[in-house]
Image 1 (spheres, helix red, strand yellow):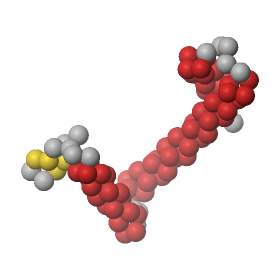
Image 2: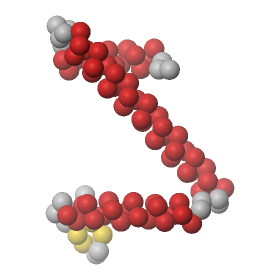
Image 3: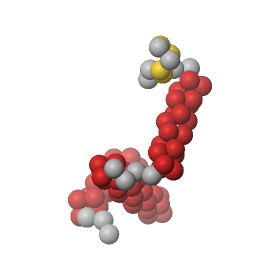
Image 4: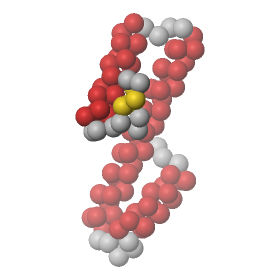
Length: 93
């Protein structure tokens, strides 16, 4: 589960955001939303570590490389649609 440090940080965020006088339901919902966010971040971090390990070992698959390229192209397209300035063919943030 989560560490005590994470628990303390979540409690501090709740207090700073909704205050000490917020009702119990609001505190409960906000607490569980933050716990979910922490779990998601940990899962994403582990996926990145595994991908980096595969790259380092030279085992990255063609499908995985295609997925990464598609993701990069999607991000570039999003920046272009958002009106980011483009120089030399590359979007600048």
